Image (tube, rainbow, N blue to C red; front, side):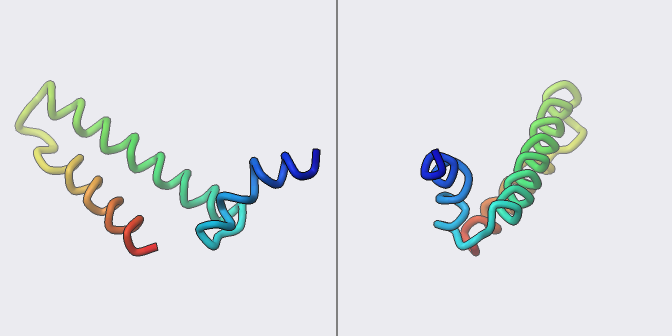
Amino acid sequence: MRAVISKVFFDHPASVEESYFEHLIFAGRFASTLFLASLAALIHAIIPVLFEKTASNLIRQMYARIENR
C-alpha cells in the first residue's frame, strides 16, 4: 500500500525535482492560468475587440516556464 501511495503522490514530483507541495503549487498556478486564458479566449470569441492577444500571451508565458524548469 505504501508503494502505491508513493507512486501516486511522490514519484512524478520527484522526477521534476519538486516536493509534493511544490508540485501542487506549480500545477495549481498552471491550472489557474489555463482557466484565465480560456476565459479570455471565450470573451474574445464573443466580442472580438476584447482580449485580442491575452490567451496567446498567457500560453506563451506558460510554455516558457515549463521549458525553463
